[in-house]
Image 1 (cartoon, helix red, strand yellow):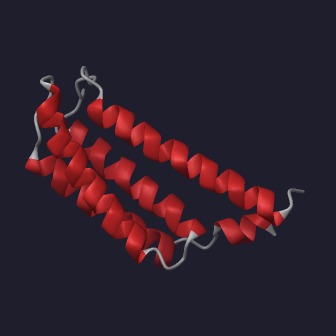
Image 2 (image 1 turned 45 degrees about the vertical axis):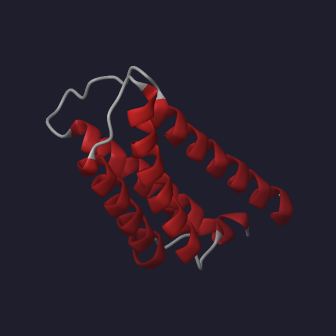
Length: 120
């Protein structure tokens, strides 16, 4: 069994890997085309819901994180315009923001487990 300090550091490290993955995928010059209608919006929604849900398990008072993830999504969409390969999309911004909200809601009210329970 992992000691609580090590388990928390692992959760945080994996959370940062998720953040870096979203940043990479958001700024990658050649994204894979979605095979279903609105597939990219579903991807945006799922990525930000997963980020928020993951980090909410680490910090139960995750209001600051929710705001930061919304700002991160907006910033990354704007930065796409400067890459020359992609363009910002207001619907991607909306999908990111809704994903953060739903991820927060699910982690806060619907999940019967948390990182703290897994650690113990």
